[in-house]
Amino acid sequence: MGRSPCCEKVGLKKGPWTPEEDQKLLAYIEEHGHGSWRALPAKAGLQRCGKSCRLRWTNYLRPDIKRGKFTLQEEQSIIQLHALLGNRWSAIATHLSKRTDNEIKNHWNTHLKKRLTKMGIDPVSHKPKNDAILCTKSQSKTVANLSHMAQWESARLEAEARLVKQSRLRCTNSYEKQVQPIVSSTSSYKLSIPVSGAPTRCFDILKAWNNVWGNKHNDVNGGNENEDLESPTSTVSTIGVIESSTSFFEFARGNSSGSCNDGTMGEECDEEWECKTNNQAANSIPGFTGMSSTDNNKEHVPRGYFLETFTDLLLSSSGSSNHHNVQAGGESIIRLEPNEDNNNDYEDNNKNYWNNILNLVNSSLQDPPLF
DNA sequence: AACCCCGACAACCGCGTATTA
DNA sequence: ATAATACGCGGTTGTCGGGGT
Image 1 (tube, rainbow, N blue to C red):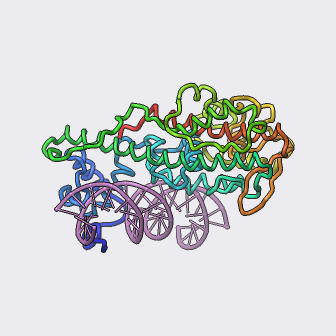
Image 2 (image 1 turned 180 degrees about the vertical axis):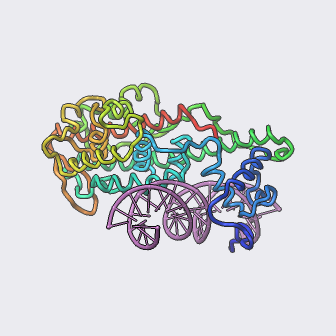
């Protein structure tokens, strides 16, 4: 099947938009809505293709866009969501209201990816680069289960992102109907989509997993090792889980030395992050105060320097000297000494990691985007 | 002052997919 | 069922400004 060009290429302007063009596009959409992007440029008097207009609108002119530096929370959200979703920028953007997928993608490529690399973390897999497979059976099982659930949850996140977008479209359509009832007389949305503001039932896998942890936490190793974790379903209760985990943001902001005063990650913060994480990469050099084993045994994420704890979560490692980085089979993960305490450390860290993602996404659902 | 380099970000391109005729 | 069309996404490129030499 051949593909026709999105628009006539001849005579169309390319490159940066001028303020005049912005004004034309803005004025037209405010008055008429965008309608068909293909037809918009002619109607708005723009020598641009519809695609270019759409991009300009969605990435720059849209009124609900937040611009400027990314906050610490936003950066952390991006990293965690990227760990779960990969390069699905659109899906990630739905959980960071007011940020566009393009902006997130750019920020990832220019900042976050480099930082993770400096930290010795593979920005693709979000795993330490020089680590190895767990050697004990229960640890391997845990990793397999986490991976399994991550796949499920990733699929759910994508589905949810689609719903959010459909909801946005619906809202936009309503807006367009208000500003110009004539155009939309033929458009109808037959989908029954949850309206923004109504919390979507989601992340049940995380929650189910959390429940499993809550129930089985103390006998993970002592329990039936042959008992595979069932693929969670969306019918699991969602109550009483979130409270068990402290917001990642809370401890991220808990130490003023870990973030800039305005909450942004400026260059100075970068420097400090790099410094700290180099320590991490150097594997617990003197002065490193990462997640202690004592902290790990707690139900909540420990307070402390953001990057130490965050990279600890990412690395699923402890500040103790009991863990080693081993490499095998191309896969890299932290290997803990095969004793029960460290198994618990490892599992607690994973739990905390997922708790954080759960908190993150739930918080985003409580404040759904309007568009 | 001129040039070069590099980072940041806006914009484009090509492909996949949903929708429509 | 199929083809045509439109839209959205992700990767990539282009442009611009600031800093260094």
